[in-house]
Every structure is written in C-alpha cells, then in structure tokens.
Length: 56
Image (cartoon, rainbow, N blue to C red; front, side, top):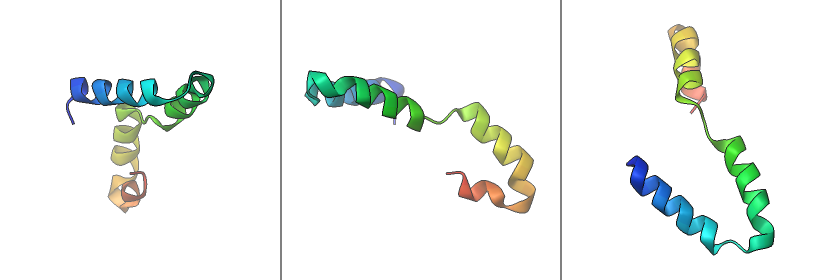
C-alpha cells in the first residue's frame, strides 16, 4: 500500500470514530505499528534459524 493511500484511509477511519474514543484509537494504533528497522534486525539476527517467520 502506498504511504499516501495509507494515510488517507487511516484519516478516514480516525474521523469515523466518536471523539471520546479517538484517544484510545491513537494509543492502540501506536502500539500496533511495527518499525521496519526492528523487523529487519530480527530478520537478520534470527533469519538463519527461520525464526523470523514468526515476527510477521
């Protein structure tokens, strides 16, 4: 998914949430976003063993 399309869809979802629940959405979304750098590190470190397949 392209970054611009992702941001547009995320904004649409955010706007559809009632105002009193938006803070909870932001907190839960931040906890679910995965860092590409961390994923690459795990993949490089544990890739030899095949353990990186469980990170996705």
